[in-house]
Length: 252
Image (cartoon, rainbow, N blue to C red; front, side, top):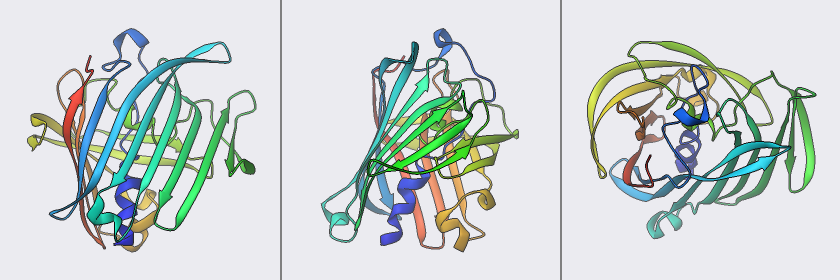
């Protein structure tokens, strides 16, 4: 049951834009809330929330603050309690990340992480518990693990494309290959959505997939103009996990 934490990791690995778009064409707005039901197999284990929280100014530039939180229910708390929240500060055109924060409480693990992305010096600084742990080089545009959840929403998706997606969590820089797949009708608690499948390559992902070479991670985005992530499914060595959209509000 401790491997339940993998589900919360995969919720941060959705995708990233093929092309950056201007603020006026973003398919989401401040106030958008996406609520999910989490399950391990057929067992409900908790809930998650993604939201476009606010616009804020960073070094004279306007940026979006997006948030993600996840918590286990009373049943799962007995085995592996999770109360984790993440914040990402992203440029207003969603072309690069500036700040990434994570307050992680998962089982016996408790940590507070802060990552600053410095594009003048092309480096990311990783701090934990208020102390700098490391710095690594980055390119002129890079995205944190939460902000990439929004970037596949910036333009219309087509089946059977392949893109290489740069991302950085402050400790490592990776290029994740993501392929789009078939379109299908997905039924979730929030309703039925015509959706398109995306699949990241497993060898480029860390964690449980290292022990599960045949593991599969799939994310379905709605094919309408808002391109909402409606379902995330994974099948790995420890079982099957699902996150299904339960409720939306504040949609554009």
